[in-house]
Length: 138
Image 1: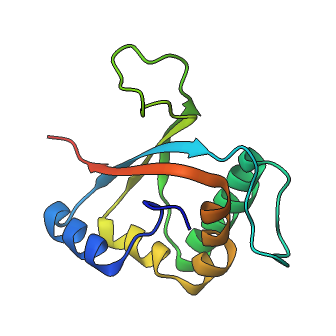
Image 2: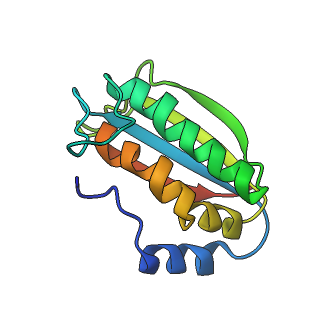
């Protein structure tokens, strides 16, 4: 598994404490692999990293949300078009910004067995790098 793609309990605990209660907006910076790297025999493997992300990961994420009764709000999703002030490692393929009513909702999703089965394998298979940043309105 590529470094930086796993969210462990310590990272989630620290985020939950820093963020507190109330709405949170998560910024996702995504860099795709050239070719997906699914485990042998994975039944839902996709041919490209983009389809693995949008069909596999996002599809599994949505099913998890439906099962849990959580409705995140997609504020923005699209490709990086041009970087004006960025470093050599800031060549992201896609940017997604999602609002949650509370960080606890996101944590429930990430800790769900449905997420682990349907979404997480795609995340590991298709992403080469990822930044996951929490923010909120002043």
